[in-house]
Image 1 (cartoon, rainbow, N blue to C red):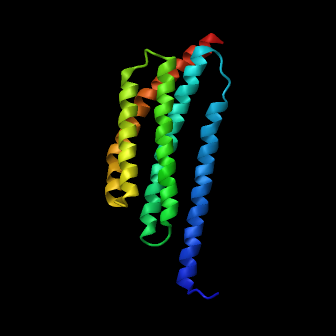
Image 2 (spheres, rainbow, N blue to C red):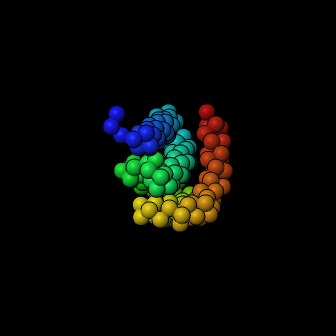
Length: 177
């Protein structure tokens, strides 16, 4: 075929990684978009919808950052291409913006929103941006360290306050029915 076997194998692996990444992002997009299609019943249901949207955005953002780290690491061994990593980083930035807009929407619906949710979301957004910036600069070891320690803590911190809030809102919605 004109290419040495090692070049064809490397190209095949890179193509395989692209297919897996595309499928993973498509699956996450489907899950994420389903949160926008929920039936709305009153303010409680709107708050529940926005809370679920925020939770989904944080989960998909975390997964996208992990995928960006995998691709950035694979660039050294030529198993992934820079363009693929760049596309995943760009999607991660879009998802971070989605976290911010979901939080703003939730705050508009519930003006008494617990400030610990806002603080925890801010910490996650800041750490996610820092991690994406490091991946974008191809400082992969540092990005992995930030993701492992700070991003995990920020993700857990937001989940630990947002899930109980979601459960309280769900109980109100259930009582309204």
